[in-house]
Image (cartoon, rainbow, N blue to C red; front, top):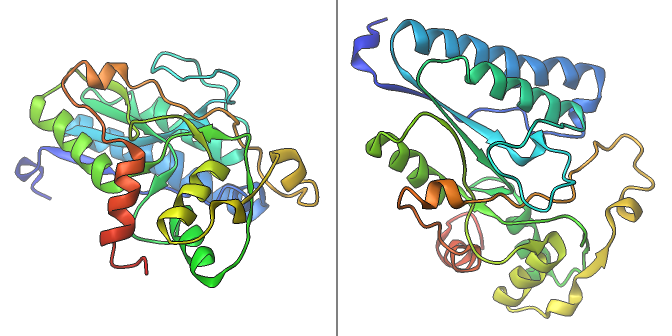
Length: 242
């Protein structure tokens, strides 16, 4: 392969089924995709003098800190979280790397916002956890952030990125989705994570605090879009949300 034609490798693939990752089969696959594959990409990038862009996750932390900076030490809880932390470690061995740590990603496929929108349209009243807090990250904005780092030739290293705005719980976000979908916000019933998963012993542990500190990337000149504005635009324009 003629690697001289390329400047960067973007690793946006990941095994993200956090509950399935707790099973024997899921555990093996999760490690292969989130850690072993990243090691291979890191070696290729280093050998051919390419920049590796690797997408990380708030799950590499246990969620005990109210806000996570790029320098916080790893403290992953479940298998998925452990593999993402391992992926970060091997990505950082690449001479030229950007580890872009993000949270609560919303794109064109199946996701929380789309599910809540569909429930609102069907008149269903969901129960949603209210003690996990953070900010949404829309893939369009994440892509712009990656391009920003590459074009600006920012110093290599780890950068947090999510959409901006207020910190909110999943239940609060669901209520906003309901309102924007023409439904009543009070149709969303809040519940604690412990109560929600009490009958699901196979569920992976979730960090309660997922808020990422955005000061490092904003200092370079990138100001993330407010997640509520991005959400409104997503619901209005995304072809897969009806």
